[in-house]
Image (cartoon, rainbow, N blue to C red):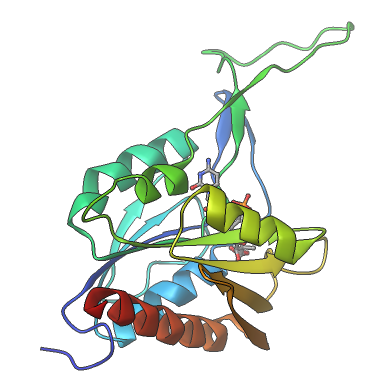
Length: 223
Ligand code: PMT
């Protein structure tokens, strides 16, 4: 068996964006590249874990030795995660899941006209919140928070509201967080826990975050 802080453990990680179809040729999405989630999958694998990576569309290929599940929409991601998460020791939600999808996805390409048009959006399932709500025997649940303002307050609020074991918050905007090769994380956990992981490339940052997650996971298992 592999040595390492997560030897013998199973970890499910979500990564990348989701695509919410408007019609067969158009969709809504965001700037997530999958770099952060894929780096976490590699770091968890190197820490000894069996890793399942559920990823939205990304140009990155799945890391070697990781079980990859490719999805498109938030509802696809939700289905694939819920089908597997029951047997996992840890869950890390690094994907930028679309909060909303078009109410209807047209079966045919929507035709252009000269009049105004409106798009009605409906909420997607919140995968992270559902995993955290699984109750007794749920995986150690780590969320991400992507914020453009008031990072600490919003992240702590998500930690409490969704009853997470840990949350990793990053500033996002045109030039940071999404897509960039490096990142910085403010990590929070219940009981006013906080650690700052300084700016570094995403693989290095992922190794530090996996280390921190493993410490807290084992502390909880012992406690
Ligand atoms: O992929 P990269 O280009 O490397 O960029 C990395 C990243 C910026 C996407 C990543 O570091 C990050 O912050 N991921 C979470 C992005 C996000 O959607 O944050 P949020 O604050 O909107 O969501 C909070 C948490 O709930 C996240 O763990 C998210 O995965 C989860 N969520 C959100 C909505 C939803 N319907 N289901 C969810 O599970």
